[in-house]
Length: 427
Image 1 (cartoon, rainbow, N blue to C red):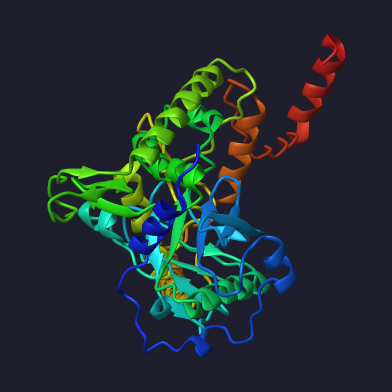
Image 2: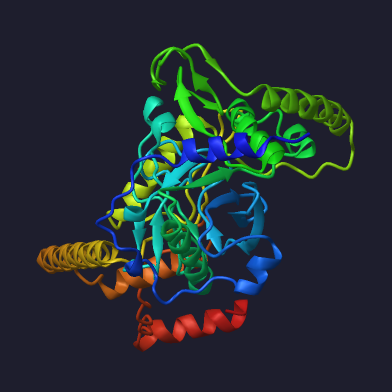
């Protein structure tokens, strides 16, 4: 299963066509950075100025540098752990959705930024022809240093310096653009079987054709777009051209590649079927559920950029239509966030002062009303005693009378008669 050196050179030469902006001097592209040693290059049949291609795998968190050998095919020269990438598996849909792109992109010297705020960076070239055909938007999608990402692939400063050096040396060798292949994962039969029910599966199957061509030929595929889809290593017939929005023209590819691909696909299909029945498959990672979820995340990003309090994490849309939002709220530590926080604190203090003033006024009014009420008269002593006696006698009513004065004894003979009568009758 081989492809001739002539075919490899043809595909490589077709890929790297006009588009280089010579206003960017190669000396400005990371003059500090150095890549691998000449001894390592020589051991792999490579030279320092040979051309490169970059492959990115989200799930595995890897960025690979492939460099052209003296036989025209490419070999892996360096693999890096991605420090951080943003979003979920799946393509980027819209500005602000925090998705790192997936697809095939071209990087020219003018896209290399040695003065980046993220140490060093290069623009991936998003949106490409495929993205534009689908109305996808986004700017400044980078590979950069500083290990911080909001839609980019972020490396450490030391890593991105080496990557820059590989690019600089390839440009010096005559490469006008290097290809970046960004994938959700390594597109093995096991991984494709694992994600066969994902909403992005059809898109990933399309990317896999380009992935397979590279696996077969070890040469970056020639990439075009027609009928709003990627086509790989195709040559339009009768002088026709590819147009992203239009129907694909009559096209062909080398017989050797077509035969090799058919053989590769037969082996793949058997492995794919076996993987479906495997019980050892890992659980699929979350992926973006199309443009609807992208819009939700973009709205969240805009609110966050304005400094508003939003959920700590962006919302997630499940395949069944349910939305997950974290309960914790927070505000971005940014100038906009600090300004809005200060304004809200000032407004809250103003509201609190008004409430306290209203409460004080209500209390003062209540005190005035109470002071204006007539005071009740104290009850008379006799009535107080009568009421107390009544309370202590249960259901009976008792009335207290003042004590009577003793009767005066009659005087003279009448008094004597009474005394004698009393002694007789026991009185």
